[in-house]
Length: 231
Image 1: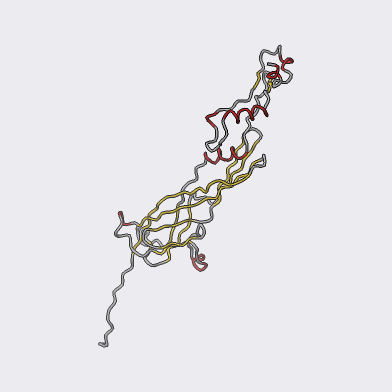
Image 2: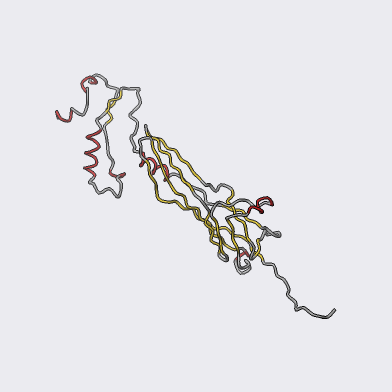
């Protein structure tokens, strides 16, 4: 008992305070990291040894929760949802907006497709900032080949002269697909890094969003005739 009392500094001075509270350290085994090889009792003993109970008089705020920067960053990132990519393309011919077999089909990210996402979370005195950064779209058409080393740029007459580094060349029309549209898989991979005010920093597993869109593909047919010497 005498040793236990040493964890409650100046406890005698609060003997007549019937409205204040002691806050004591507590560890919950439900939140123990799955890859931690230590026994829970070992973790708990180490934490309690470094954290004495704190007395808070009535009307004052309870102690702020403690959380290390790496744990806070992971918890914040687990709550984030990055929207999947949406794209625009050109050419768009006719009522259905079809591109053409064999032509360079420009592709670019549209809508809420983010190149970078930044999240900040605070718990107690610790603040963590997480940044997710992507460099390009990954395009996989069912019929054709794709090359994309960026998020693309929208086609315009001015941009046409500059060219694009994000395009698809379809090698077959969409006629054999359901609804006469060619599926195109779109992925965006994000590198995740974080920093925190307690000095923690590092990276997390790459995050990839995936979706499938559909592009109608038409073909231009021509008639070849044998030359003749007749007038």
